Length: 116
Length: 110
Image 1: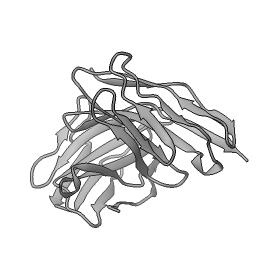
Image 2: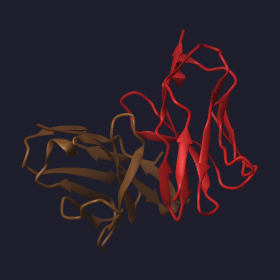
Image 3: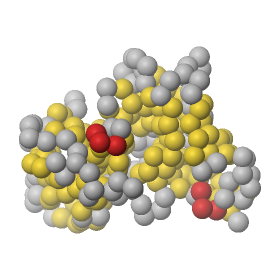
Image 4: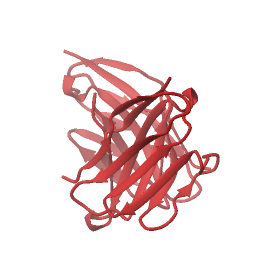
């Protein structure tokens, strides 16, 4: 089946540094990818919609300058958390829409970010 | 706005027990409804879906029926297995955006 790979699965970074998370569709092209964030015992919250070749669309309340999204190819979207702080520690998960597969949404494995 | 409400967890059952996980939703239009499952150490996987009222989604022995009159999409399985232990998320989709419930952890004892 279609696979979406996220990397890294776990990352620890120091406050004030930036960290990049990659989301790749391994066997299909995805013009649209989505980034979610999940706090413990909370639901997944959509952060932004990533569109290949254009700017991402951010949900209300999500800081564009803090969470940089780049979707430079049909198989890769990246989320960069800039100047990370401990409150950014969370589970980040991406999904990709496979247009050629009936617009089915496939999720990555998620990335645990811990900012110390 | 759109929202999904799931019953509080966690849920612990013995093997072969009957499972019901409640899910209700509010939406500004006519959403599609989904159940996703996250097994330990893995990403989210689509379990089943229904795209219109009275549709029944089914997969791996799980079923859920889209009830427009009660705005519900409860998940059921007649006989759970240890391998069903996972986190289950109810979700709705409108305009290609997914809105998730909080998820509920199911643990099945041998």
